[in-house]
Length: 379
Ligand code: GDP
Ligand code: MN
Picture (spheres, protein in one colour):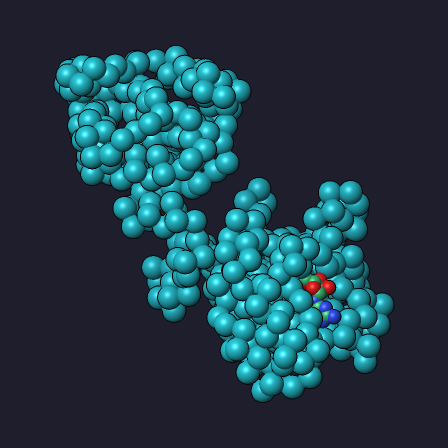
């Protein structure tokens, strides 16, 4: 689950990281009032679940309250990476001497949190990572021991020569590590961590991603979910009890089981296609789930073909077939459906599909290659 910057700030602030106090506004008038309370120059910041807001024009400095209202009017309602800005954060503006990057991610390969820091922080960090990866220093942390003194020192000295600043950076990294572990994060990032002209080290931005598995035991974090900022198809899928991840391709996939869903996506790519989503309808066979899945997938205008890949075990293929038939009666499916099913109650499933003039393939390769072929014909 992605957090907004203002939410991540509150968690990092609670952990002791130096961050200015700000407030959230949903109208220019509110932004103006906050700016008046804060006094001095402020920064108006789009609160959307996307990075690169600065480059997209979603982060703007305002000299005072009147200008804060103007900048907020520009940012509210704008789109950043397809997401509409509904809220802005208003914070006191800082003067910047240098911008560093401090990130902590859960690295599955080494099975531990890994710090990544760079003295070349700021809005161009992706470019730094791509072009000059040697400017990023990485240190993996063994969760049994936490961030060790020598590790923190190495990271901090790669950022600052000044001893007081290095010490401040060490504190920030220890606090970031604690916040990361305490809140079940898969990512926690400060970019930029700045130095001010008077030498202080301050965080200007905060990004946190909470592992969804943490949310059951942390209702306080779960309450931070902002469904209005999430992809509507992912919200609908979560409410329907489906494991669904929206992707950018045009082959809509409906599969039972996470492993088969992954394999199906691999095979779509192998045949030169691009999956529109990851979707696991799960182990139970409930026609309602199939209907919901089809409703969500057909809502994506990019989808050119829908591919079912069902390996019947606990999932009964006749239930899936009934779901497909019921869905096509409830709403119009404009794109072709390619069905591969095999396993439990396969004969019954084929009879159900036959009854409405549909067919199913038995072979996974045949179905996937057919689906990809249909996207080419549609193009
Ligand atoms: P992001 O682009 O989504 O990561 O948004 P950030 O919050 O990191 O802001 C982008 C950039 O705006 C930063 O790298 C800074 O250069 C600039 N910026 C943000 N806050 C301030 C501020 O308080 N003062 C000044 N002068 N610049 C700021
Ligand atoms: Mn940033």
